[in-house]
Length: 88
Image (cartoon, rainbow, N blue to C red; front, side, top):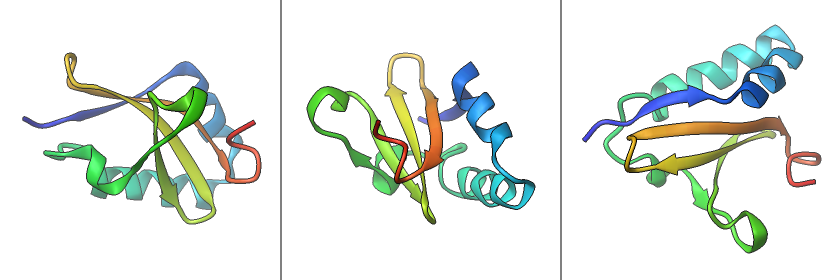
């Protein structure tokens, strides 16, 4: 089963706030590691605590938080931002 990638409205907004070079790096990483993958969990880490239903992906100094929904075969981006600010 192949997974597809979607951005939430908040995820799109956060991505647009980043400079063009960083946007390109993140999108290149997503295309390589998440789009049409058989298992999106191999590149991420399941979060703990009150965020335990989400997965974290490291892209340089940035973190992509995602909700993997197996029923709909969709990875829903929640927030993109620098690692110092992402978990607030």
